[in-house]
Length: 357
Image 1 (cartoon, rainbow, N blue to C red):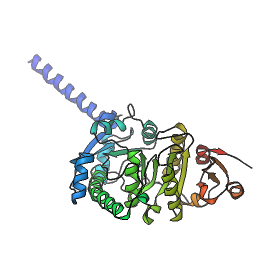
Image 2: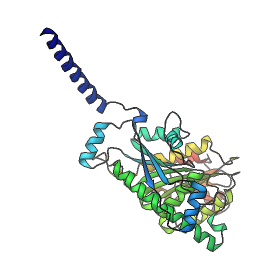
Image 3: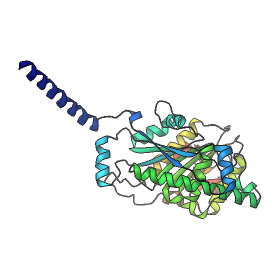
Image 4: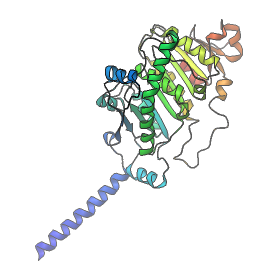
C-alpha cells in the first residue's frame, strides 16, 4: 500500500512540476529556432512567357516565406493576440535577398548566422517580426526598364506582375496566419533582393511605410503610387548600375517622391559600414511613424514621415559627398539635381560630411 501511495505521490508531483514548467515556458524567453515559422505559397504562372521563365530561372514550384518573431515574443502573448485578433508585435521588417533555398532564407533571419545582424538586432530592440521570402525573379539583372525597347519592357512587366500575384497571395496569408500588422511595413532589399523589393513597393505601396534598397544594378520605372512610401536608395560609385541609380533617383524626384539617395565612395557591388549606419538611421527615423497595434497608448507624432523630408535641416550634395545646412545649399551645390533632402541631423551625419558654413 505504501509503495502504491509513493507511486501516486511521485506521479502527482511530476505532473505538477511539468505543468509549472509548461506555464513558465509560455512566458519565458523562447529560443530563436522556435520563433521561426515557415509557410509556402504555390505558384501558377498564367502566361507562357512567365511559365518558361519560372522553369528556367527560378526553378520554384512554390514560394517559401519565413517569419522570425522578436525575442520578446512568447506563446502566451501569441495566444492573447489570437483571442483579441490584435498583433502582439510592434510591426514588421521585411528583408529581401537573392536567396531561393529555404535553409539560406532561415539563415538570413538568424542573429547568429545572418549577414543582416544589424537589422535583426534592430527588430529585437523594437519588437518587430522579421519576414523574408524566396527571390522569385522576373527582372533583368543588369538592364534597367528605361534601357529596354517598349515591347520588351511591357512583356517583362506582364511577367513580373504575373508572379507578383502569387507572391501577394502568400504575403496576405502570412500576415493573417501569424497575426502580423498588415500595413506600414518596413522593407530592406540587397542586390537581387533590392531588385524584387523595389518592384513590389512600386506596385503594392499600400503595404509599406518605407524601403531601403541597396546596389540594385538595374531599376524599374517609378510609378505615381510609389511616392506614398518613404525611400532610401543607395548604391556605389563603382557599382555597375550607378548611372541607372541616378536616373531612377531623378525620376522619383520628378514624380514628387520623398527619397534619400546615397552613392558610397569607392564602393562597388558590396556593402560598407557607412551605408549600414545610414540604413539604421533611416529605419530609426521611420519607425517613429509606424503605428504600434500592440500598445493601446501609442500616439502618432504631430507631423507625418514626409514633413521633415519636405522641410529638411540639411541638404546633401551626392556628387561631392558633403552636406550643408539647407539655407546654404543653394550657394554651394552645383545643381539642384545633385541635392538630397536629409531630414534629421543623425541621418545627415550618417549620410556624409557636414559642412557648417
